[in-house]
Image (cartoon, rainbow, N blue to C red; front, side, top):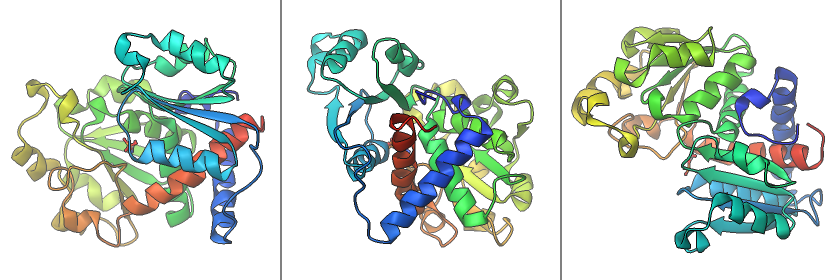
Length: 306
Ligand code: CP
């Protein structure tokens, strides 16, 4: 494949190749191999129109570890504030010879538009409420490395599914790889048609307590108050009472189950600090795995091996 715009771009074989390659990248890092020469002379542009901590930094680290030249572009402080369009920005990057453009944008579909204007590979680093495929890859990698498999794994994705690009990409990728996904949250934040449209196999529950004992993985989502309308959301206290993961709820999970969160977290809202910092939490591990997963994506896309 040339671009990674959606988790739907990945069939099971390609997704597995990316996860296996991420494993090789992590193994090399573990053997103190800090840098690979693979992308020497290639240019990766990080084009960020929305704020990011983890994704932006890990794409930069991934590209640098592969010896690529990295250009970091943030819309803040650029000519975007003078009204320059995405297309004109893309043509400027094209003129500078970008081999890959990693884009985060508030508009769903922006990576698809961008791919029509640049010759290089386009990687979606989060577009509006639509998708965040490399987050899904690092999440799948984390599940597989902790639990040994993805096929048949029971995964609950909990909370603000309506606004979550992480949830959409995870449903697509996890079901491609044979996992069983249950979306859990208040009815206003999980329209049933979204679950059905993403994958007919995806289940929906409005009762977190009843779901937890059957899960291998529980993935808590950030409540995106900045995208929220009052009608969708009861109150922070009511939300936490019904859908927040605290220690009492965590104990309902099977012994082996893990707790995930893509970050950034609203500590005390969807997850308590005790759970986020517990030994079952993979939140910090997910960030570390993000570098390996993004190295694998850049390596395979730019090397033409995916
Ligand atoms: N998980 C994630 O996308 O985090 P950032 O917004 O910090 O990149």
